[in-house]
Image (tube, rainbow, N blue to C red; front, side, top):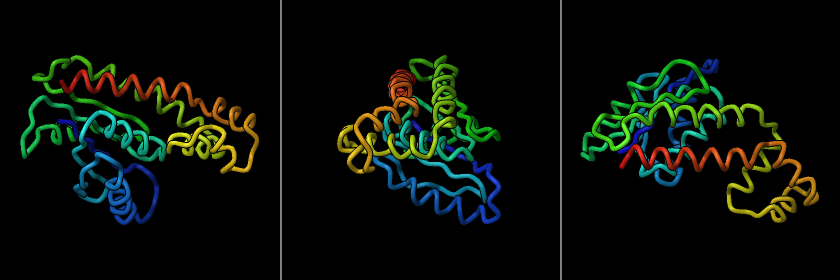
Length: 187
């Protein structure tokens, strides 16, 4: 099982409402279960697989104000130890992902590799401009570059340049690496 625990570390004065709204919005992502709001700053949820975990973590990293814990266990039960592993993993530093892989998993040593992949992805996301976020969001949603360029009212060449500057290829490679590492650890 796979679970994600996130702790809001931003400066919003209405953090309880922001955390609750974030939990509601994030639970609409494919493969993400409903969130438990734990205290004022913490949320946690089970996810259906590595792709859902990556999608959720990337959304949290894009915001930049969340410390994230990822828990991976081989055991599948109603009361999953993956949630507790994710809670154990979460730190206090925003924009970081800490990982706990329980010993029963096939690749219990993969936690550091998964965390490293997300550190690289976090760096790519932190450097992205608003225009880069718009471009990558459209392409990630399923549009091709031509359709995304038309949607933004820019040329195909400008779209290509935005994606290049936004590190789209690096994000795709990092995404696939993270998915593969999580799948390996969860099997």
